[in-house]
Image (cartoon, rainbow, N blue to C red; front, side, top):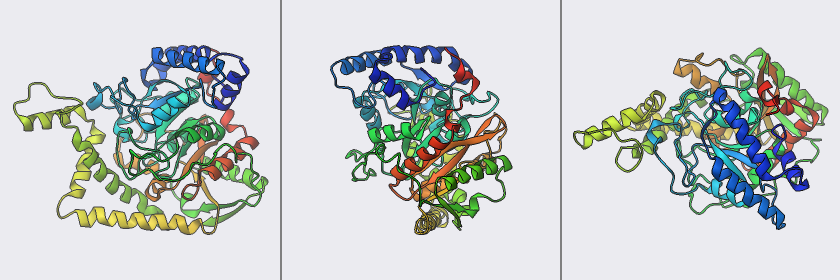
Length: 486
């Protein structure tokens, strides 16, 4: 059961090959057996999962099952889940139990899905390797010596290892697409505002976006259909109708115009990654697409602009963690200032502290105009680059990351870690959608192809990704751990 896609499991449940409870029990047993090596989960909610599975089976027996009824999944531990610890991978929230559900959690529950638990992540979504978690690093199931990517590394590793068929992640600068690439799964970052952020703990509010991580584009289409849509509780949610993302998956690609940004194929790109990406593009040409080179001239400004804007927003968002209302509180503070200082010093990890300090400096008097305002101007130029490119082509393609998954501990220098997101960060600054699909290997480590579209073009991206997966089998490859029968 664990080697099937979400779409395949839905068909099997509908055919009565097994029940949701049987499927849930099987996956919970796999988590218990294998996750000790991976560390992909922070919290496993076995009792709640079995109760939800029984409810799904009862709904199916009454003839009330929907497309996702009874299907297990996992949630990145950044989504508030009522009655369940929501830690954001941080000591600061290690004792926090959410009193309500995030909108996406509500929607998935209403669709009849079964949550198996909360997955590990870089603390407050700050990282590209999942080594910044208070609960320890996550391991890549393809190679336990490698990182799974971040910050949604726990979700990516759990899906790749066959512990769960799908999971939710969040993407602030590539945190769905990069771990999807590293772990050989499919990960979609929707247009900013397409999916509600209500109940999703904020890192950088103008960049954060939730999205699905699964084995195939078809799986992601089903999940996006369930979680997308306007939410009055989120002021950044866009009041726009939700199309049927599944309906258009099989549309042919004849006439599709693909742009290859020349800035994505220059210095710093691994030869093995470039080879895999270019072979994938040849598949698209065989399917009737045409390819041309385009330019995104402000790409090299994306990382400096992002690391001004994101830490500034993080500094503001994380100011609420002061030891007073919720979260970690130091012992025996001498006064209120001591409470603030020691609670924050003890509760936050090194990377989070680094970004808070950067952001606070950026927003301080005398530096706001010089840094933050200038970064926002650069952001507008980056957005315009994409809009200009989409006047000429339908989609853009390139690598999701300049390298395959790197070894645990290999990038100790923060700047070298930040450079891992060179091909993903601009997408968040522009607010456009992007998807990473498995497209080959560099040795034993997967390589992802990134496909980008204009605002609200998720249906087209899913169609383009699905057609590639119909013509290739990269998304069907499994690490040895996922091939085990139990």
